[in-house]
Length: 118
Image (cartoon, rainbow, N blue to C red):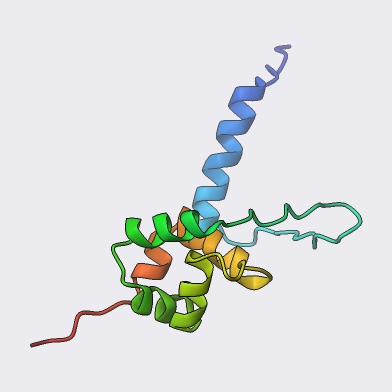
């Protein structure tokens, strides 16, 4: 009688990844996926970082956008962007998270900007 070898942790991880890839590609039928909703009592959402006027200006410069175009891309007024950069106002609320997304994933902002044909 031969004993069945117990797979290593690494082998189990690799098998699980192969199964996940097969499922994602639609090659695995009948798989059950359990999604557990996240609730406030078990997770913490990190606060958005603060943005100084200089940080907003650096981000805009990195994206190579004018204040007006940057404002349009963020769906805020050009005056709002000017006020942030001149530190007359401080970005708050959803704008903080939007600036964070623009900083970490500039393609999300830039993909909505199209050149006009001449």
